[in-house]
Image 1 (cartoon, rainbow, N blue to C red):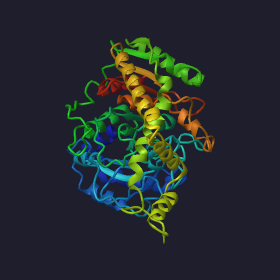
Image 2: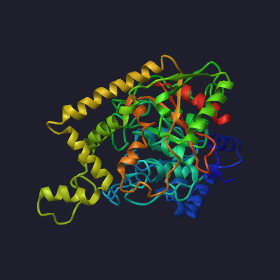
Image 3: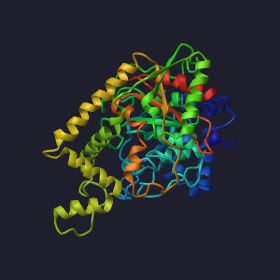
Image 4: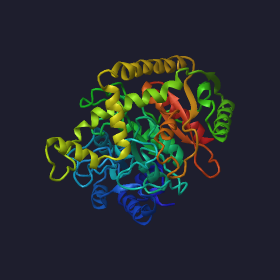
Length: 469
């Protein structure tokens, strides 16, 4: 097995024992990308020479010393492009600073390596909305890798790199993790600083890891978590050691199965996989409890009002004036704005900006945006009441395995409805993780484990029990 295919924990052991060097790992990552990423399209850019130079200086005494980590291309890394997979920023923007998540990775000794593909500005759930290239699902060629962190999930699943960072606004870490057969963790809102993450939905976005193992997710969360004065929404709560107690099992835990998540529309085989896994956990000492999250049916509509509204505001800065590509020879200032945005943004981004602007406009704000915020409160209360009864919640990640590429082309509503099981956690600010189960007809499938706000230790412990079988 190549070094790029190894887990972070395995590489750490080999590094500290002197069996390999950080340069060996980076050289293997470069070789794997060079020989195989042409067929996958996971990476948009990478600087092998800079990574090799960092490997030579790696401090192996640090928790992530010498380990290369792929970075979703909506997270700023100083000196590297940050395109958000958009024509608007292609070849026109190089980041002058590090996101806090990158600063923390570097402080832990990791080597940020390359920028991975995504749905443009993280708006999508297939990575087919990238304005720059197509990404294949390495576990199922011809099928989508999921999105919007499809490039990060594909890079890990294809064994091009040991781990990667993604961002999750409505399932964009967990869903591609499920479709590609890797582990994807969405931390609680505020657990990781969003400073330096190009904003999509500011009240929903969260950075998180995609890894080979649950232990690797815990290792990365240890490095990334913590407050940040540059992000007023980040939390200064103490950061525990997420690897501690990881193998303590589920005995004594109460795990909920929400009846609303197992209704019509869910693939019967996915339901069977989850129910079978729940029985295994029950045999290991967990108590399985049926629960209700009664406002689940309103989650999609609520999310697709709030998220586009925030996107409409956040993307107003991309106007062809301050940075990014601009139209040539506009007739006037208005044409500069409109023509630059028309040429720079793809159809899905335009769709969401228009929708968001509409629901925020005079006469519609109360009818749509304000009402959606009230329903969001009800969804949050559903979870609060549920977590008074259970430690964690077991659900599907997606209603089906990875669809074939192009199968939902021209039907954005189909993509939106596929987010039904993941978006509630973002609306409530809770944590969630996707852990691989046995594939279905050769296609990967994940189990979603949801926890209360700052309940990462619980869901990691449960995910580790699932992973261990």
